[in-house]
Image (spheres, one colour):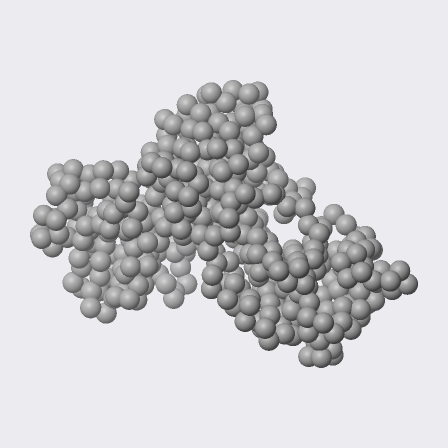
Length: 472
């Protein structure tokens, strides 16, 4: 029987995917003692995965609340452990030492979960070194399966991967959860009753692979973009109305306003350190710590360089969103907070629908890039977008020993003549890409392309949503 106490969102939606992750967890559980780290950005499904794994097993779940002192946490953890394991009243575990001493004295198989483990760094850092000491001295004689999880990817790395860190090389495995892929998400949306393929695609372009948001789609009966906006965002009682605020304040506390402004800058297309600094009116030299936090701690932004710059020290980098919903929220909710607070949701809604095709084009490109990279990985050594200082860009370039492939991605249906014009423009960009292995093939990816087979016969690489497995 699962034994834990945790307050979570009650999810009607069944558990999806993560089969390989669950297999790994079962493997380690069967060979306890084991120590597993589960990390990944917020809302990616770490807790849901752990709870699914714990189902039907003897388990203790401890949530590390950043607002509590170590004394309060030990009192809470001790009470939970006493209730769960039916301990006699004379057993005291109200200090970290007593708590860990008792845990490691248990002889029966037990899963012990510490969720948001990295918060001990600020609450009581010696707890981490104490856990290391008990694991080193008594771990091998126990039957514990310890799982620690954390949303702060950077801090988890420092605790478990940095040389000299207390728990360096103690984990049997570090499992980094990624957002769900587009094919999985579109399947889930179909299961949730979203029948129209265009509606499924719009909802994916809004929420991306963060499965947490899909639970609200089911609970509030959202089956298209309009109903999702009206019921989940554009209402005084909408459940996601404070989403970015809640996440950023929890992560960064009193400095949250600066992080908001940086996220808004990136959402407005400011992608270099100087552009972002000018937008938020801060010296460029003051930005790196904030940007590192958004990349490593929050995980909603990433730093990219052109595909031809890989393996080099490059000054061509850009800061871009890797989270669809945060980009949307920063652009349309945060930047229009006066309208939002005054209840003028109609004006925000009108702007969203007026700009949706262009705005969602970025998310569409990201989706297609990921799927094309998957399909091309066995033929090319490096795959990714390319750009230069003049502003020339190619959406996807694949580099291989036998040649290269350049593809433009468009979030629309293309006529034959439009496709030819895009291919001609793409060919003009090819000489701008230095050291591009020859020969160079060119192509287009779009929602649909008229006379696709004719273009293929002419030697072009033509891909539509059906080719990518995203057709109706």
